[in-house]
Image (tube, rainbow, N blue to C red; front, side, top):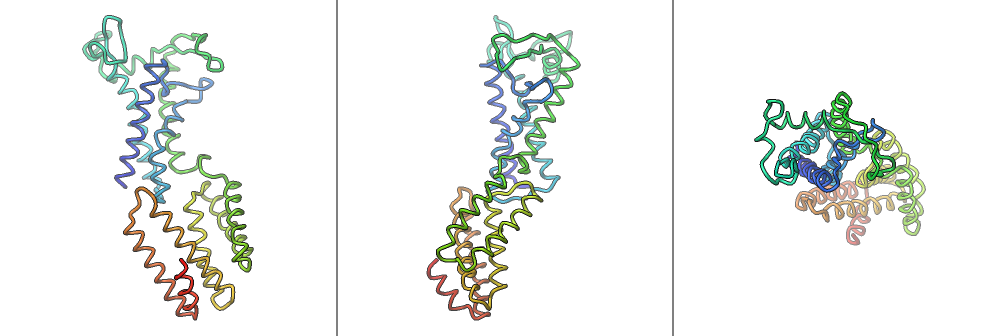
Length: 313
């Protein structure tokens, strides 16, 4: 498992813990305990928020997580983000002359007992969750909430529903199946814009290339439910390689070779400009790929064209 991914997962979840604490202290609402229509846990959004850093790292580095790895990362985020939110509230729970507060003022709650039981994290959380009062707010109007009283069974059930909601939100965002990646219509618009830029110099291959590119990406999108920018570029590279090799003895082979090389160069240039990019490894990979194409081009009487294109890029 990638250690940097785990660190970012923990960091993202810790950020949510801080946000939830601020909501609890200054607004009087805990995100992890909110529900919509008494059924839908708002903690789903907490899992999503907590996973942003990990998801960005996955997309930037084009990582593919196995089901087991995905489960592990989402579970870590849930433990740190969801359970951690309750634990931080417990750590902040103090008693002073004004009673219970969550601002670290006075003596910590662990110095006290309730019904003869010490206020450990488990006891405190169990007591606050099961005995909390439910309030119904219409259109977010907190000034006139409807007090529904204490519903112990419902509270216990919703604790676990919110727990799984948090995990589900994290998992669905990490695996890219939420609609925060580009929709297929957006992808098609991107390809159409790219297609128009090819008219001037590559009109001889443009239609065939764009038609096949859309077909390939459509198949991948249907299968994976989501596609990132780098995956689109990888589709371009693999397709141009196949088209160049297929048309090696035709005039259109020159255009495909030209497009192939320029696309590869731009792809690696973009990757090396990223903050966490391993530039040495990427340059080595780029050089090897270019040398591989060079040998293939010279072996198929396209050496002169390869040299001319290489000089331009």
